[in-house]
Length: 369
Image 1 (cartoon, rainbow, N blue to C red):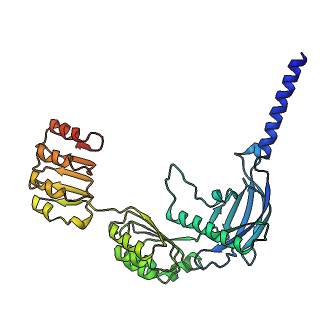
Image 2 (cartoon, rainbow, N blue to C red):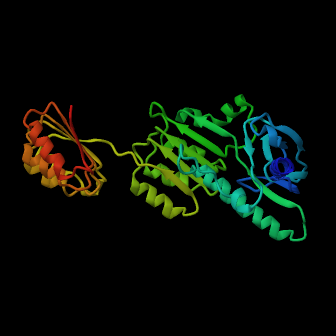
Image 3 (cartoon, rainbow, N blue to C red):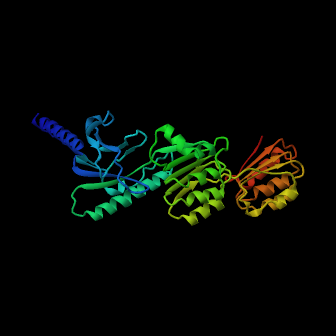
């Protein structure tokens, strides 16, 4: 009986110790000095609040409790007196457009590294720049005050995003900003030309602004416009999506001009329509051809040799062409081609398609539509 009682007591003690260890995980506290700076000119950001929040260890998934916080001073600083590593610090701009979160605070390897999500892949260009500046400016400030026992964190304030839908909006920028109540200059632009209404003219008009971040989507901006955008001295990052007139050559030129600017985005090359073998032969090898659509009986097996010169070719579509099974097999032997689609194509049998598939069964997809 005594043995059983001692066993139960020992088990309870272990459970209590485990609970105590859980409750004290992350209980170490430090004084943290948060300094908020603008990205473009490094001036103190005085129109922000700093808020410290904490979740109780028993209610990890509950609503966080506000521990400390307030408005920054004239130097853009606010001191938090007792911060746990697992607390959350929120930087909120007075205009309500910018909110940033800073967990955890130490070690620095975790503070300075952008979070990577398996759902969204690698960080955006803006996120990459933000965490780089967070690291560089914090380390620089700590080196300038080695005797300060507080944990100093210098936060670059992300600017408010302004979206433009056409060149006319950019041309009337001052008037539009007054309507929106925005007083500070534009540092973060999102150019969204849904109807192709954003051109290089918008870039020329924006050069007077201290731009830090630029995003381009569905615009008609060309390589020359991208180069002009990259020449803005304050610019830190460019990210673009679905812009038909920006080529890899233009991206390389912009990166050469401004190696300090983070430029991210995939090049969207248009589908090249080819009507006969002569057009295949004349296709520019330097044109970064990725996708071709062969239309009509003027395209024969002889034209495949011309397509073989294009190392960037990945997708081939055949619509009522003069290609036979011989030509299809020749296309299948182009090792970098990933996808071949046949539309209304009676001259190639299903057996011929299967024989072409067998040439590269694991790296080539062929289908009839």
